[in-house]
Length: 67
Image (tube, rainbow, N blue to C red):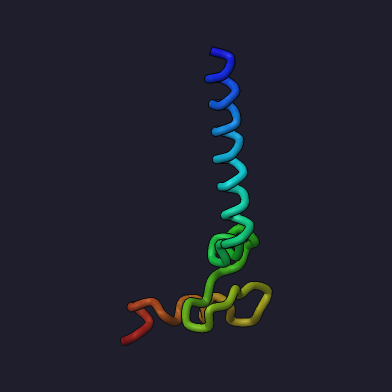
Protein backbone atom coordinates (compact mmCIF):
# COMPACT_ATOMS: atom_id res chain seq x y z
CA UNK A 1 0.00 0.00 0.00
CA UNK A 2 2.87 2.40 0.76
CA UNK A 3 4.33 1.81 -2.71
CA UNK A 4 0.96 2.61 -4.29
CA UNK A 5 0.61 5.86 -2.33
CA UNK A 6 4.17 6.83 -3.18
CA UNK A 7 3.63 6.31 -6.91
CA UNK A 8 0.21 7.92 -6.79
CA UNK A 9 1.72 11.02 -5.15
CA UNK A 10 4.55 11.12 -7.67
CA UNK A 11 2.04 10.79 -10.53
CA UNK A 12 -0.13 13.65 -9.24
CA UNK A 13 2.93 15.85 -8.70
CA UNK A 14 4.20 15.05 -12.20
CA UNK A 15 0.87 15.95 -13.78
CA UNK A 16 0.81 19.24 -11.87
CA UNK A 17 4.35 20.08 -13.02
CA UNK A 18 3.45 19.27 -16.63
CA UNK A 19 0.38 21.51 -16.52
CA UNK A 20 2.37 24.43 -15.08
CA UNK A 21 5.19 23.89 -17.59
CA UNK A 22 2.71 23.76 -20.49
CA UNK A 23 1.15 27.06 -19.37
CA UNK A 24 4.61 28.61 -19.11
CA UNK A 25 5.79 27.34 -22.51
CA UNK A 26 2.52 28.10 -24.35
CA UNK A 27 1.05 31.25 -22.75
CA UNK A 28 -2.45 32.42 -23.63
CA UNK A 29 -2.08 36.01 -24.89
CA UNK A 30 -5.83 36.58 -25.23
CA UNK A 31 -6.59 35.44 -21.69
CA UNK A 32 -3.63 37.34 -20.26
CA UNK A 33 -4.77 40.47 -22.07
CA UNK A 34 -8.30 40.22 -20.70
CA UNK A 35 -7.05 39.52 -17.18
CA UNK A 36 -4.86 42.61 -17.43
CA UNK A 37 -7.82 44.84 -18.27
CA UNK A 38 -7.27 45.04 -22.01
CA UNK A 39 -9.08 43.73 -25.05
CA UNK A 40 -7.71 41.54 -27.83
CA UNK A 41 -7.54 42.97 -31.35
CA UNK A 42 -7.97 39.86 -33.50
CA UNK A 43 -7.05 41.64 -36.74
CA UNK A 44 -3.91 43.27 -35.37
CA UNK A 45 -3.12 40.27 -33.13
CA UNK A 46 -2.35 42.64 -30.27
CA UNK A 47 -3.56 43.47 -26.80
CA UNK A 48 -5.12 46.92 -26.69
CA UNK A 49 -5.23 48.81 -23.42
CA UNK A 50 -4.55 52.38 -22.42
CA UNK A 51 -4.86 53.45 -26.06
CA UNK A 52 -7.21 55.96 -27.61
CA UNK A 53 -9.99 54.11 -29.43
CA UNK A 54 -8.81 50.74 -28.05
CA UNK A 55 -12.33 49.33 -27.81
CA UNK A 56 -13.12 50.31 -31.41
CA UNK A 57 -9.95 48.53 -32.57
CA UNK A 58 -10.96 45.41 -30.67
CA UNK A 59 -14.53 45.46 -31.99
CA UNK A 60 -13.71 46.12 -35.65
CA UNK A 61 -13.85 42.43 -36.63
CA UNK A 62 -17.31 41.84 -35.16
CA UNK A 63 -20.09 41.20 -37.69
CA UNK A 64 -22.29 44.10 -36.49
CA UNK A 65 -19.52 46.52 -37.49
CA UNK A 66 -19.42 45.25 -41.08
CA UNK A 67 -22.55 46.81 -42.51
